[in-house]
Length: 394
Image 1 (cartoon, rainbow, N blue to C red):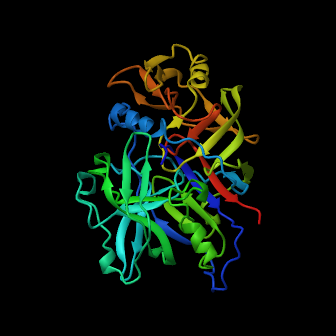
Image 2: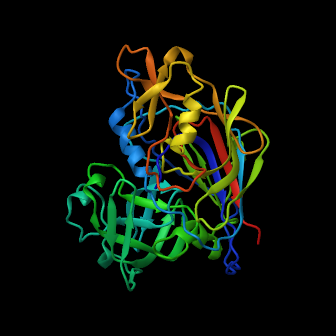
């Protein structure tokens, strides 16, 4: 789970080197309704400092990129209509419902392209982090099978999840996968308490799975229950949805821009990136992790400082978290590119305080991110573009 901003349509194709079993496939993909997470801008137009810093801390020291042998993928960029990017409520993540077990038990999970595992609270979890959440009861499911070992994952804000490992039947929007591995968590950090989400379903690549197994979409394709190993997001103010098994072509317009995913990381990481302020390119040769589980845009401190140095009267607002302020009246035009068109971002998060002439920049450069040199994290809050379609060649 990395921080977030606003990718409107995110389609990821997870083609596998495994031959699908001869099961009848669904004729087309299926949509899952999503719940919108909260804005980092308060109703009065000021930026929410507490939430902003919390999101940054989830990114810093997130985890070291693994050196593995992943398959090469393709990530596409596409324009999605004219849907505005606005927040609606106090939810925190892009979440939807899944069903686990026989008979099915219902859970609300965050669909996260920055991680690769599924965990939800166990019925035996009694710590505060599990309070108020739906809990999985293995004894109520006739298809639950316990597995050896334990699951543990930690995030950049030092939150942790620990639990047992089981396999069970999982259904998302009518797509059913049998024997999917996941963790019923028995210990969840208190930072998860009070959130509406029960758990996290990872949609990144198998290489960063702490369970060492395929995520749900890979399993669905291997079992032949979806027509293609793809998923896509429509992230907008209304009608947000996760589309599994393809892309809903009625939801976007424009030509597609293809980009290879960098090998050996396990993340949706695309290279050849650049950042421009106005018409001038300031940063080039960067790589970018695309993360639906992240809100912020995070870059190396030196690169971020270089961007703000070009903005009149920009100044450091919070050195520890790499936040900058600048006059709201001179909000800069900032855009990203990966060798094709320029993709503009919403470059400020709101006023520093009510009535202030200064705004906080949407790009942060905190120290100690744990990311390699030249690697950025692009979440889904301030990006006025859509990321669509990634695919592995067989």
